Amino acid sequence: MDKFVIQGGKPLAGRVKVSGAKNAALPCMAASLLTEDVLQLENVPSLGDVRTILVLLRHLGVEANGGGGFLSLKAEKLKSFEAPYDLVRTMRASVLVLGPLVARFGRARVSLPGGCTIGPRPIDLHLAGLEKLGAEIALNEGYVEAKADRLKGARISFDIQTVTGTENLMMAATLAEGVTVLENAACEPEVVDLADLLNQMGAEIEGAGTPTIMIRGVEGLRRASHRVIPDRIEAGTFTVAAAITGGEVLIEDCRPAHLEAVTAKLQEAGVEVEVGEDALRVRSFGRPKAVNLQTQPFPGFATDMQAQFMALMAIADGRSLITEAVFETRFMHVNELLRMGADIKVVGNVAFVQGVPVLSGAPVMATDLRASASLVLAGLVARGRTTVSRIYHLDRGYEAMEKKLSAIGARIERVK
Ligand code: UD1
Image (tube, rainbow, N blue to C red):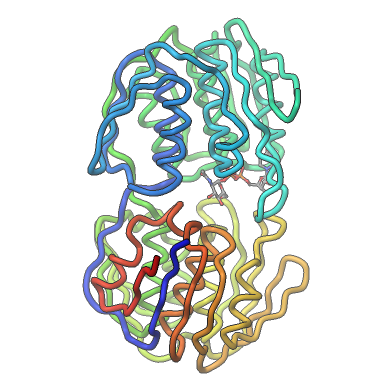
């Protein structure tokens, strides 16, 4: 298993380019199941989760070709309608094939994701929504089995805003008969990106990016080409990398409007952020000030940036309260940060982070994708050497992270 070895203490300087968004690429790829025509995607990041969904799509019978960020997908005929346990277990987002399969082929068998390291993360809202659209749902041997003739439009009000739930039902509704209204829908930029793609394919979707999405069902969808939006979480991770090391970094090819909650918190912490059209310049001197934050659905502070921001607060001047309000348990990085000398106490879903002047390098273990990123960030500023093991978690969601960081001066090495 690969590890990162990091020698901390060097301010980062230079420019870094943001890759395509993992969480937008995955649903866009699943959307290929909605048509027999070719779907062409650009700016697809090369990372673990994208490879996993490609394995799944090929397993279903999708022809997939491409490279260098380009992907061509054709789901003309399928040979299977099942997402097996081994794939869903490694990546929950595999559940995104459920809506498209039921909508176009009237059948799907998808393994239940089961528990995962960031809380139970059920898919009950995806299933209740599909039932409202007229699908019959049964649970058998750990699998969701869904059947339907043609889905029928319905009004679906989500109890909780769910990103992949909104995406799954939005995709399913494109081919349903009649109008579907999704209420309390997720407003994340990745939902908007998927709606843009679906509309290009001939769907009729209005309101994506607001809590009410209206989808007028059509008979069929057609070919399209689409460029995946930049990854706001990767961009946000680089803003923290610049801030935590006291460096100056220009983060290019990003959408600053998707990062407003993060940049506002950085500014509140005393970090300089200059906002350009598709770039952010982040400059920081000395220790940041402690600030409080609470994770929220978009446009609030993203839960996927909480762990990285906690690394920054670990060296801040003062005490910061970080409240995780999206997932029940998402503080696995805390124990590892403690091993590096951080002073953090967790009570329920609140972390009390008392900033310390220095962290010290240590061997630490990655436990999930964003937790791993926070350990790398802590390693960049820590005194001495940090070894982050199990970085396969990081490789799931960051493209060439160590290469991008070394190019802006970090002393980071991948060791096999
Ligand atoms: C997506 C993102 C993930 C991000 C999360 C929250 C992808 C591939 N993943 O995950 O990176 O951390 O949004 O921004 O886009 N819930 C239910 N029942 C359901 C569905 C969700 O109770 O049927 C709950 C979850 O347990 C959680 C909350 O709703 O507490 C939000 O989860 P959700 O938005 O669904 O997360 P994902 O779509 O899985």
